[in-house]
Length: 250
Ligand SMILES: C[S@@+](CC[C@H](N)C(=O)[O-])C[C@H]1O[C@@H](n2cnc3c(N)ncnc32)[C@H](O)[C@@H]1O
Image (cartoon, rainbow, N blue to C red; front, side, top):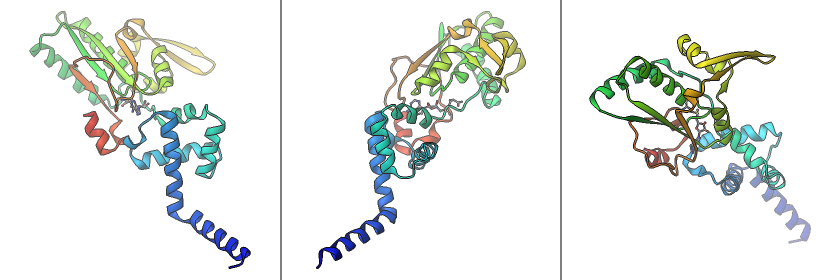
């Protein structure tokens, strides 16, 4: 076979491979391996479709079309690993998200403290994102403690993998959307309102902030405390992870 013919066949094979689904799936696997190695995240615990959507979202933002180019981009810009992780985690949350859950929690906990004598109630909220869920629980318990003399003390522990979300939680300052479902008496009792050029800002009281301890961790891998909890909240997370990771976490 002539050298030119050999070269022609080589490129024909390459083009048909490049266009095939097999090539595309091989190269996203390589990218996922690269991300696994650089982020330390166990991607195989998440739903495959979820991972692919997050990768494609990030690549679209960067106007990168090919997985190989994104791998090269990560190699040249190591900061991209943090930026990818930042976009990978979906921090959507707000105070009193699904109000009836918290109404039921309040009914349950009143009943629970009557039948279980506790000095300190311990609650774990995981993952907690920007803190809206654990602070909601802290306000409900604080309100119960103020109105019931025998109500026990409480401590809330919260985990999330995302350091940026935890930073917001630690600051305890929120915009209008975060508090849109919050019953007015909680807003008035536990927040101070300030209006600046970006709109209203709501700052949570230190009394509530002090009841909550944030832990940065991958909850599929570990939990850093040895606490035994009275109640565990784990909401809007199972949808992202696969069957095996769900079993492990449970
Ligand atoms: C949609 S928020 C849920 C917040 C809250 N539980 C709620 O229902 O409003 C999902 C959170 O899961 C966190 N997350 C994703 N993977 C995680 C992991 N392996 N370990 C801990 N947190 C994780 C994300 O950072 C994000 O803040």
